[in-house]
Length: 68
Ligand SMILES: [Zn+2]
Image (cartoon, rainbow, N blue to C red; front, side, top):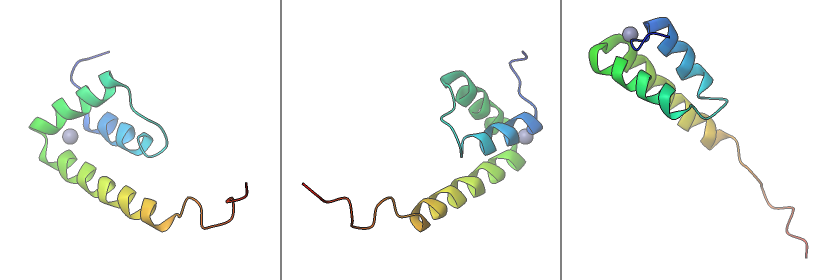
């Protein structure tokens, strides 16, 4: 495993982060790559916005399970 993740790897990890929590190592590698790669920085920013928007669209629980 190289210390320098490729753009492809960063894209993949970013997409995976929508479904699961990334490990500390994975996040560190992504972050290190973002320091040197503008393209991926833009990409992850957009994914982040998308994720936030999606979270807002999915209500976790609209009234209901309020029984005693
Ligand atoms: Zn990149």
